[in-house]
Amino acid sequence: MTTEKLLSTLIKIDKFHNSPTMVSGIAQLAIDKGYNQLSDKQKGILKPFLSEQCSGSINPGGYHNGCKTTLTESTLLDAYESTDDSDNLQCETCREEDSFYDYQREKLDQE
Image 1: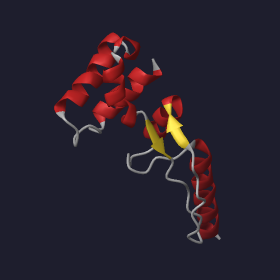
Image 2: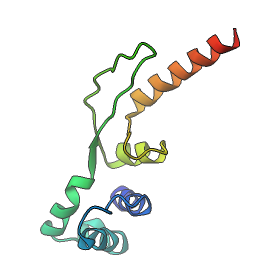
Image 3: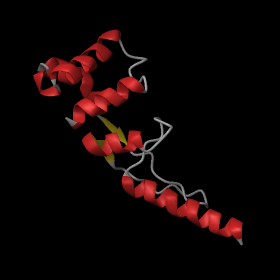
Image 4: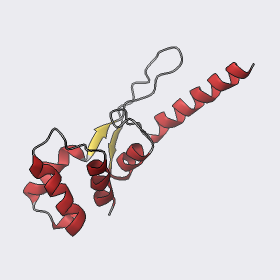
């Protein structure tokens, strides 16, 4: 079910726009019939879209934390749902780091 929700999100954000039309068609088939109903070849076509590298977090000093987390399944779906920038996906830890930095900036601005 998570894979189908993820594929639905990918269609909504037009993630397949640079891919052959058949890719979005296979994604829609997976949503309609279930990902597990796809052939191995069809699953192989969708596989590159089912994981992403975390973009990491950059602290106020400009240091990138070097996060190497691979987002898959529910973590990837969470990352898409937690951002307006689908090219800047973060794991939960990096999102928390960014929130902490934002909190610190707001606190300093108030002083």
